[in-house]
Length: 284
Ligand code: C2E
Ligand code: MG
Ligand code: MG
Ligand code: MG
Image (cartoon, rainbow, N blue to C red; front, top):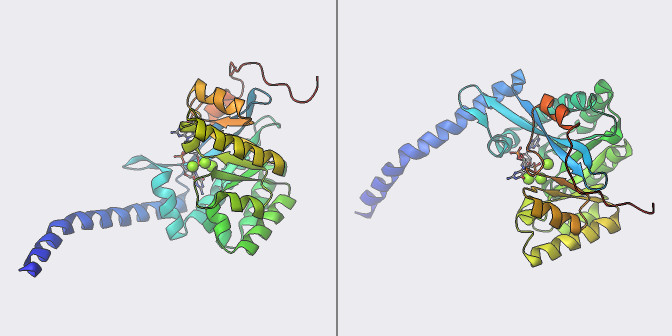
């Protein structure tokens, strides 16, 4: 009897599971086609410097205009691209495309590109970076690679030396989504990051005094290690004021702008951000 019941339960769920499986396979097949035909786009989100009160650069974020499903979220296709290894060629394309776009911006603006742990596992990332810089003419110091803790969780020695070689090229390295992992603090000791990006989940709760204390501590850590600190996901004027008071040097978030199409990003560079008078740096 139990067996019969189990079978019924199984039957009841089977069609749904099947549908999910088929949908995933279809998405994977579509992703393969898109990767081959370069069917992706990049959006550029402004990163505002609180030291200058101006746009300091943009983060390139991948978009997938799917032929029938509309825009697919990176939250959905990036993990799939990582599982299948397609992220390697997609990442190479993103590097080249973004560097070519950034070369047309004023030369004091930086470009940030996300790099997946899978790209570090395969040989060739360094060469892709060099090729993207050379073909675009973008100065290495204007390129910043954003990595997450998952990169450092792998074989630490190989990854750290790969990161060191990238830094030796003049490229900057940022630690993305800081504070979301299991042992964020220990990773700060493994590599001299140029930038720490505090995860949006902290900024959302920045008005909670305990969260503010954590952010203050992260800012202190960053300052001692020479890293600049970016607050991710700043959506309101209050959050902006809070992260500024805590010493964050850059902000990114919907308060200023979400990710923009390339032409809109270029227009944004000239926009008056209506920031309060920038804090003075050093002595007058
Ligand atoms: P991320 O690198 O942490 O990028 C920031 C994400 O937060 C972006 O989501 C951005 O649109 C979103 N965001 C920015 N400001 C706000 C805000 O004020 N409020 C809210 N609610 N969200 C905000 P997006 O574009 O959906 O990308 C999600 C993630 O996908 C990225 O997180 C990154 O991990 C990954 N990703 C995107 N493009 C690439 C890529 O080219 N390569 C790799 N490896 N990963 C990528
Ligand atoms: Mg990022
Ligand atoms: Mg992030
Ligand atoms: Mg994130």
